[in-house]
Image (tube, rainbow, N blue to C red; front, side, top):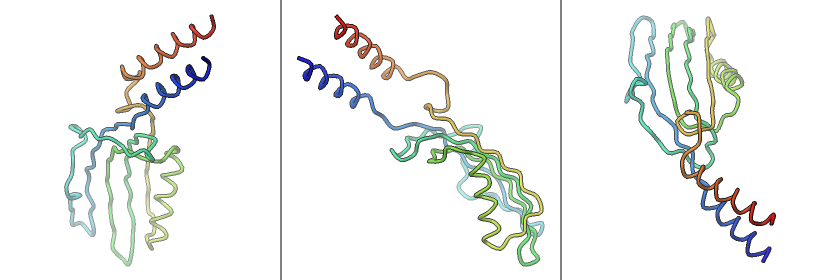
Length: 148
């Protein structure tokens, strides 16, 4: 009886697994020596797209990067906003990695502002999806029945 119950609980838990869903957008511009270019194929953040993340992507991220960089005498200004699925869990560390990557690519950083926030619920909204709430309700009933 206990093995059947354990099997039933495992089946319910596996049926309840799902991939995270996040908003997606990317917009901004890059200006090199006064010549401004918009990032191609922009999705405006005022009207983001919804997307399903891969199983390895454990968070939704929202990021803003504003940078003033110099390379080979050219001044480059970057202003980018992004929302996306991500595998990062630490926004501050990711900002440091982005700044370090610029240096590795030969850029001198004149100014660099970066803010990346991460969250782990669908569309970074509070609360659980109805499917998960139903699953937790079933597990609670099963736990009650086992205890008797």
